[in-house]
Image (cartoon, rainbow, N blue to C red; front, side):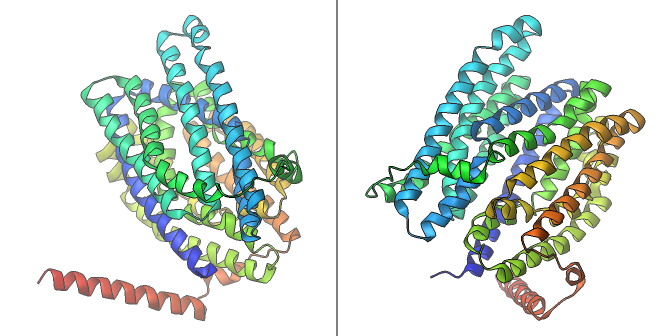
Length: 457
């Protein structure tokens, strides 16, 4: 029986490795896209993908995280009939809603062609198919996550990013299809990754074949037990996350969207090194929800090590970002460097916030999470508008810092109610557990270096 600590460690290590590899391929894809498209085309692409992201949030209204938590709990309690019912109904819901969105978006392209241009209409048609693949990907990831199948998550993430890079080179560079080629690359990579992970998905599903599905509608009960806030959180969050490019476009134009997005995308790639822990903690928190003392230790250690890891990331980014941006993106994106040097400090705030979503879902207090996301939209709308008018893109970058800090203060206030305490003083101290962990890391590094030196002899 694998211990809980080992599950966390292995899951974090696998998804961290997947994120690192995916980040490399995504960064290469990103560089090619910026090189292939001019600033106006790239800005238009950003707005198109932003619209897709907002639309995709309505595919499951954020209940994927709820299903992950509750399905994990049902499996631990060996109520497999309930687990099968949850997974079946969730998958059915995703397919139906995805298909409805596909029909609506695909057949709306005539309107966009008449009102805007043929270019926008073509992007709309491709976007419709991306909605379908996003729905299927949600089913796969929810299934893998709830069954702690981190290897399949590892595989899906890497394969999608790898094939996206390959297709961008093929469609965008060699076939010179421009913005259409880039959109087709996003679609083709999603389809390829899903097909390659079908065996892993069916490997999990086949275990339920002999299980009689519960006649009770636990899917509906799961949604109602978490309340109306479940179906509100995801759309509101996505709206907040995708609001900045539209504010920038309104006040500064499409090319300014491109400049800011280059900075925020690089920031996101860097911060993605910290993100695996959130996915790993989602099912773990649900399993340990009754053991507050143990949960407090897991949460505090997670935040502590994330902060430690973010400090060298910030230092490295500040030193090398001017050279990196100039080499990768050219003179057209010099301003993006200075914006990035502001945004990179978000990694510290992210380290503090990454444990919050698993806690809110595990304790079924999504109402407070919804309130935080609404306040985020208010901050972006108010501060984003005012600071963008006063300081341009730098004002929007500062708005991101303000948003992250306010979000942490609000979330921490709510988790204290459920008994979670963050020991801020402990974040800078090295206790006996930390010392032992550092010794293990040193031994691993020394062992690896010795093997490397012997192989070069």
